[in-house]
Image 1 (cartoon, helix red, strand yellow):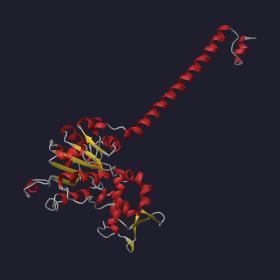
Image 2: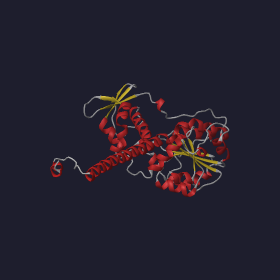
Image 3: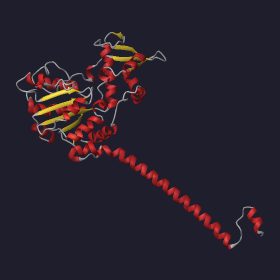
Length: 347
């Protein structure tokens, strides 16, 4: 066979050297492909492992930071040793119930009728001297991070801070429902008109409702990211106050522990402004079709996009820390988390 012809025809040359080169090239190609396949498999395994770690992360919070909310357990001991308890929360996180509980437990009508006293410097000389005995429990919604930062700057072994938390997207959805119910029951219009069918149904225009949500009116405001941000995390980490974060769903258990030490005679639980009390069905008249849709269904469809489309978190910061905190909080059996300077640093 003519070697040149064979080469021009694409057939391997019939020399021993040529055969070895051709075989070597095949081997190189095979092993290169094999290595590439192994790399791809390894990458897939790494991604799959990360996914599994992310999925199971909430199941393994540091055990020493998870608190038990039952009687005669660690949270009970913390409350027993604290002479002063400050309870804070964003809107739609069980705050109204906790404030009414505090009023009844402290046997008063709040701090001189000042609601949400831990904002705007209202917890001051006047509130200090109005009673002979200072209230051992103070509960307040927070409007921003300033109240939390102020409390963080006064750490004491006799003072316990309890922050009630709710995941932000669910909090916004709950806030929207509350604002719509407020409009429909006539408590406040926010400039919107409602078409009512007795006390059973209420129809609102979709466009004005979306504009109202974008303005963060009513319970849509006072958000988690307004309170937990870079500034407040820094203050908590630098000063190290005694701080417990609990999920809002555990408010009844928290009341039981507080009542044990401060007002054992109080009838529990104290609940107010809960979703079950809102009986009127709210509907939105759609701007595009003119049809109507239940507010629950509308929020279910729009919920994942609502905050992004309306830029509701434009001033948020250090949200990664909040997400890591939630991983640990929701991973605790009683959803109660003891917060330390080291844990904040790890978030």
